[in-house]
Amino acid sequence: MVNFADVPTASVADLPTDGCTLLDVREHDEWSAGHAPGAVHIPLGDLPARVDELARFPDDRPVYVVCRTGGRSAQAAAWLNASGWDAVNVAGGMKSWHTEGRPLVGEHEGAAPEVL
Image (cartoon, rainbow, N blue to C red):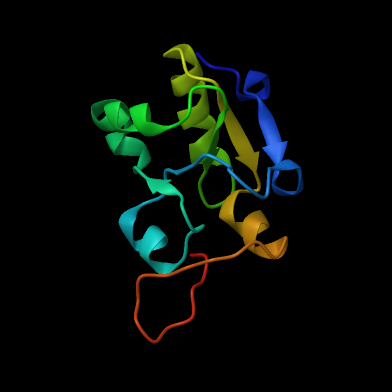
């Protein structure tokens, strides 16, 4: 059993503003409504089957993992760390990302991006 208190965590304010490697583990509808530019989207349930896609990430920086508020991303970061990755949970998730004024892009033409 993983103790999520042991998962490395960073606040949105502590994330690099340039060159941040961000993995979004939310569901498709959440991603489509609004996500961080440049983030990679792999829903939490798909992560074990699609972890090879992370090979394109630089190996000299941590992978910051984000969801809506931090619960799913803590699970993903714990799993990634146990699998040999350097993963950090983003506290507060995309809700905090938006509150901190970080950019959002959406997939719905004509609709403003939002965090579901």
